[in-house]
Image (cartoon, rainbow, N blue to C red; front, side, top):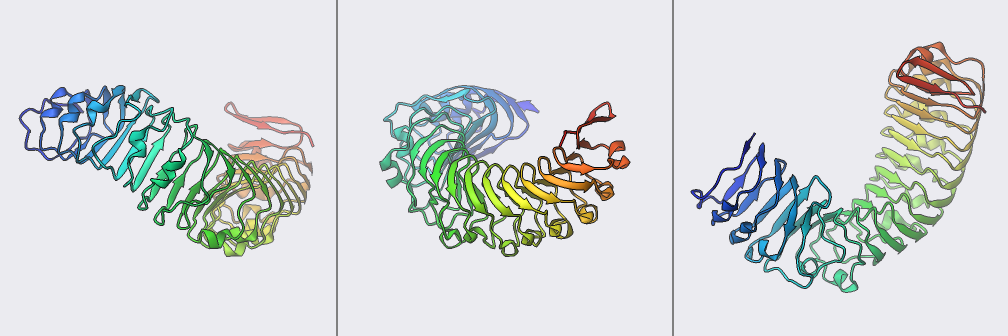
Length: 420
């Protein structure tokens, strides 16, 4: 690891990529008059970005990602960068680097890629951002923007846009149901203050992340036709109401997260149509009916969270029989009855967390739990279990909760056993 040199003698250099450097960017960076690509990403650099950077009139690609920048960026840093097509900058200390650019200033360049993370850009959407109408890739993650996106801003969005990440801001207002961006495949607008009906935005999206907003109303019907290429659907922590339509069972879908909404009714039965599903999280809703037996069909399932709903009936034995990649199951806070399947220990070698608390499960805690080599968390509290806890669990490295007692297997492992 070394500090940056002074570069007055490298005026013919066109590409500069450095690793394992620390310290400041020297003012002499502005003397690299032929530089087209400057990549200082993922070093140990700090301090301010010198205004002399704005003298690099041939610069096309600027990457300052993953350092500890501080200070202020102004128009002087960009006014001569007429050829600039991509900028990627982030700092590890949130908001320590501030884009203090006049609101109405329009830069001389047309960007294809802009990536800004943990830097202060807001609170408003400045004109210099709205003027970029040829963007392919946009990341404005945790930039302090708390404004609503201007209506005319949607009209200026490039038809070529492929990647959009505006997450972890405080952006408010409503979104159009669709954007005229046929190539848009990744959408992350999570952790903002958007409201109104749920927008789908792009028919060709593979990732739609709208978590932690204030969207309301139903999940649109026939999602399989509206977004046929969808692989990840993240809608948790909103105010969505209504049923989960069976059309959500899509062949390509691998992750579905609907946690903490106001959804009700039965959970779709067509799990056999989800060969690629790996994560299902529908906890903290008002879903009812039985847990579908077909949910044991998707062999790739590794996280299942259906806790704090109104599911009844028995836990399908097919879950333990077929879902051999399961690592985490949470079915607590429901109305499940019956006993635990004896298959539980034979086909779930990866299972680490098993939470079945606050149900109406009965009979003995099965000895087969001892056959789960990776089990670290077991919560069976607030049920109707009887008998004793298998000794193997008390001797292992498992956090256990069953029926009103507390055990300590080691000085570092606590076993909490709640009352039924």
